[in-house]
Length: 256
Image 1 (cartoon, helix red, strand yellow):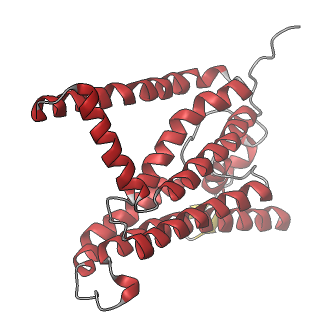
Image 2: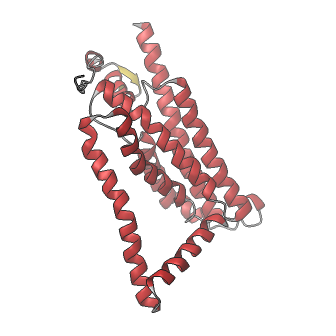
Image 3: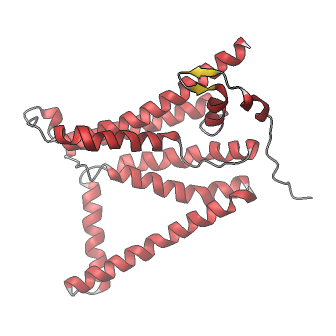
């Protein structure tokens, strides 16, 4: 049996010439191009699943802050889990879809995965020299500290939901690339939204976060709550924008 060749569909290209404004300065052409790689072809179930994982991760992080005093540093753990899911998920879904143009992405992901234990080994070696301890002993000490640091603040659950959310969402990215061709967008506009809101957080919200709000039980850890709010707002706003533009495009197409 002949091997099936990768042949993306070009059915969306004629629609990309529409320069009519859809909302504010966003044209129909740009909206179609954005949604082509953000979720235009995703099913309602896939969108709902993404929303469920988004809310679950945010809820579990909020619980960790409120109940177990998670710090702003702990809030980086779900982001690290998402990055790990991206690198682990690319090779997994490539085995399912087998798209040759994505081989370079997969190789880069595998290199990142291989680099993790190497970096950990080097850092452990440096720390073992600093503490004049055997490498194995230093590794066990550092591992136990890191494990306790994560588990004692109940951050393993939001890390798990963040990891699964990205891992499952990659399937739609592969399918969209298979059907429509490049570019391949392994991350969503939520990443750009996070950068924007994190910028606002750093310059405006961060000074406020160290105010005298400790008397309010819900705001015991001010910096952690503000950071949680910015990350949650970024994800929620990105999801809302995607759904809203998708709805407007559908109404535009029906009107034509």
